[in-house]
Length: 142
Image (cartoon, rainbow, N blue to C red; front, side, top):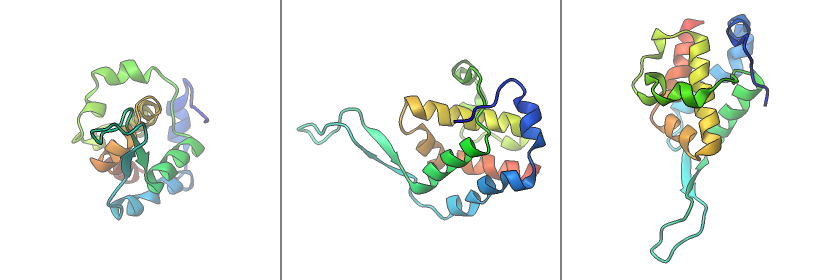
């Protein structure tokens, strides 16, 4: 995983449309996807529930994760502290057109990193339309 450092603003702002293309090409795929993941895993209890349930991401979620790491747009920062009270990550109806592309990348980084520690975060953001909103906002801002 290639993670951007302190100069992430300059790096992200230097990306060409060609570099963004693999990510933006996911927009129609996301728009045509009905299910972004399933709950599964863990041990099944007698009552039918599972211990340690987690979300099994769909192909488009896995592809998204791969692309954001390949470009790269994942930023190395204290995302846990940043996200704690930040409306960008806690408001599923946030207007991403009000922030710049590096800030959008911080939100994506937060969701991708949080998913490593709490299965299902990324699938949830796909299901709620947050990831699609961010990608469309990036496309509009280009």
